[in-house]
Length: 319
Ligand code: BYC
Image (cartoon, rainbow, N blue to C red; front, side, top):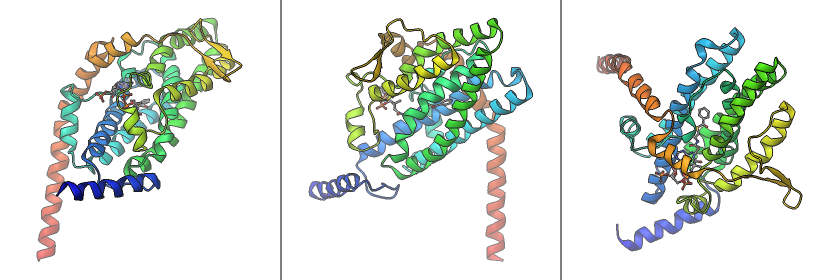
């Protein structure tokens, strides 16, 4: 294709984005748009399935049948989110095997938040309340993202995240209205998950390398800092309802901006975790790779069955 032809296609593409049209997998798109989407969607998919690990740790120790059923459903939803997102990625010409290879070799990132350990039952509450709370804030704008398969997947994901957030808040509410030991457990979980939840929304706008281009393509609709502020403003009143203290002495409502000012985030910690040196990075990767290896026979059996069905259908057609 000549440079002139590519320029024309780019102009048509940009005009479609400007008109808020959805871009579909078979439409022409700039190579950078395709790669950026594979990067973000696959990181998102990896986060969903790695995110199952810290919570899966508590399924067998949930304090009641009701809590166990809700947690089991939540973790199962996350597997489903991973599936929609991997499928959306595949429409851009990358295979599932390649995507897993990128995760297992450490080439692809997944969310920093899942590299922290879940040490008490209250962590299930804090993850639902804070981590899913931050995820909803980040993901609702993605329902309007420009790439059709991603936007459509996010509609269902957000509905399910909303249930996840509520089950987390309900766990926290119960603990906060329980014995002093239970309330301490809830406060301890908030202390440990607060700052990582703020980091989860990505580096500051000044540090973010992809935001500017992703906003132009309407992949991102809000910047990392805007989403972080929205999350803080939404969550502080919820902590008040719980009677818990946000572990930030600099947190203060600003009458002028109508938002909360907050303290310095430890970005060194964030980058250490992103680079693989967080408290649970090694364990997460070991468990993830282990699950992949142990599941080989299931994938082989499914493929053998599919091939057998294909052969049978072909035989029937030609008979
Ligand atoms: N962790 O230029 P930036 C969930 C990387 S799953 C690790 O701002 P971007 C849930 C970033 O990738 C939650 N890495 O990037 C599941 C980039 O590095 P590369 C996951 C991070 O893409 C189970 C570099 O830092 N949600 O909700 O414009 C249970 C510079 O950053 C992180 C999604 O994935 C991080 N936290 O913005 C419960 C949502 N932040 O790629 C809950 C979709 C940044 O150049 N993703 N980096 O090597 C997004 O919205 C965006 O990708 C982000 C980052 C806001 C995360």
